Length: 275
Image 1 (cartoon, rainbow, N blue to C red):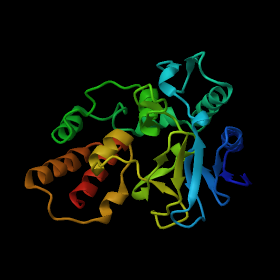
Image 2 (cartoon, helix red, strand yellow):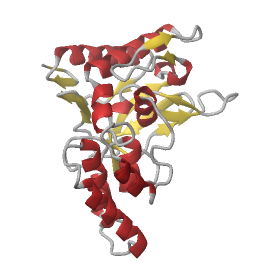
Image 3 (cartoon, rainbow, N blue to C red):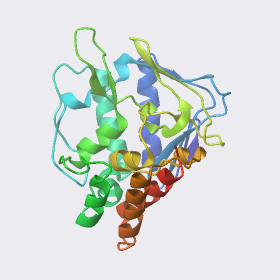
């Protein structure tokens, strides 16, 4: 299904994306004319033909969703809202329900439970211990699939001068994939802006998630292999770290059916060749 701004192999996902765009516009936001949200088998990304550095998104504060103010169930199968706070306005409430429906339609929680190194049940102790030699806190803290999803997709922003920074979901922006050379979001106090950036070498727009993490830590936290790490080859990996990365690769070979182990092994390989 193709419409202006949307290409999707699922008409329900297309409708939910269209509703998101409409509500963002109602809140005073906008997106560049050549923007396209692409959905293939539940995996979403953003494409644009705008020049690098040109404005891509402008999302006003009114469209942010304060996910930590919502009470969530512990379900690992789908996002389930238990209670919406009274202080949410109409637009924030509508966007909350639409984003929940969008991620549920894309099957995000079941997919994460199968593939995310922090969540997957088929990551054996020897792989966990191998990763902890580099990342001591790996899987030490229990996180639900809902917690992990929002941790991966939210920005921590001081949306109110009288409050500490808090996690907020910024609709549409959260669909941008990470690249180290991607755009950096800008928070001006009333809106979040992102420029177009084709760091992937295609029409796909990229966002730098803003935290300087190596490939292994990106895999452990975000659940994907950061291929942008491999753009800078280095031979400066310290011998001890090199040995530990190889250890992750070797022990992961014993579990070829585990997607999460494969992600960790691939990330270790990237880190071996990156700086």
